[in-house]
Amino acid sequence: MAVDARGAFWFRGTGIGTYTYQLVKGLAESEDFEYLFFDPVSSPLSKQIKAANVQWKSVIEHPSWQVEQVQMMHSMAAEGVDLYHMPQNGLNMPTELSSCLPIVVTLHDVIPFILPQTCNLAFRRRFLTQMSRIADKSSGIITVSHHSKADIIRHLSVSPEKITVVYPAPEPIYVPLPKDACREFLREHYGLSGAPLVFYVGGFSMRKNVHLLLRAFAQGLRKLGPEARLVLVGRTTPEVAELKQWAAWLGITQHVVYPGHIQVRHLPEFYGAADVFVYPSLYEGFGLPPLEAMACGIPTIVSCEAALPEVVGEGAWQIDPYNSAELCAAILEVVLNDKTASKLSRQGQAWVRRYSWKKAVHETLMVYKRILSDGKRLCL
Image (spheres, rainbow, N blue to C red):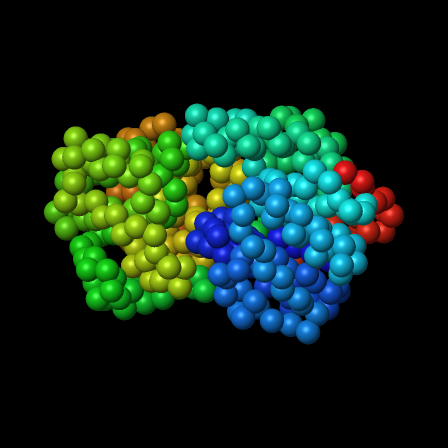
């Protein structure tokens, strides 16, 4: 069994990075198969994830993805691999195989079909060019929500029987922590102070709808108080400059903090310091950050769009992502009303217990076994 695990290193701290890391870690702990995991040359993954049934193979990076795939194909042929899993949407699926080999693809979403204007141009072109072939040639598709499954069927005309929904889960590090200790941690390590703290973590593309969060925060600032802070955690991208201009226009520059990309091991303290977590995204195939916040016991507010209602259920407050007044009212109610905050915290913690990586890995192994038992060996 081979898995392209490179995303666990490349994209650590993102949804796909978390998915790939926890999948590989969980597979290594299972004894169902022997595994060949691919990682970049500079990656520490092979030292972090070890098991008697696991072999790591470093892939030399090359400007041409075809060259990398040839490296991987040769390794799989040499080891007699029975099945290949591509967890990163299947992009750059090899065009030729030295032998017939079933390929499983985890297709997280089809956002380039739904909101193309929110995607990087190069990624969008690659996705739109390759995805029909990937969906057709894969032996099985795993996706992360029933909403994504419906979108895949609609946009790629895939048979429903070919798609299996396997929910990801928050990583085990996300647990409730003492708020005062978390705030002291942020002051000491990031120079971040103020209260109350409204928290967001994720990307900053238009799809993430952070502009609405800035507007809602500005509308509620007088009631939140002069020490209130909106903390926006995520990689610094060109969109951040636009958000800063928007914050300046709203007159809230001194109240908005951009810590940049945060190491995963520090994220529990950021969640733990927050009074409320807000995720107003216009589209998610799943959406891990709300579940991470809920696992940390933080009252959570999310958009009612796409997969988010399916994912958060009764554990989070759902709002119209086009209505800043509604979001402002929700933030104020959570921050200023202890009973509301406590109730939402309890509901979130109860809801998130239904997700686990042990379950996700088990269901993924069932997909492998079903495909292998079919006996169909796909020749690309």
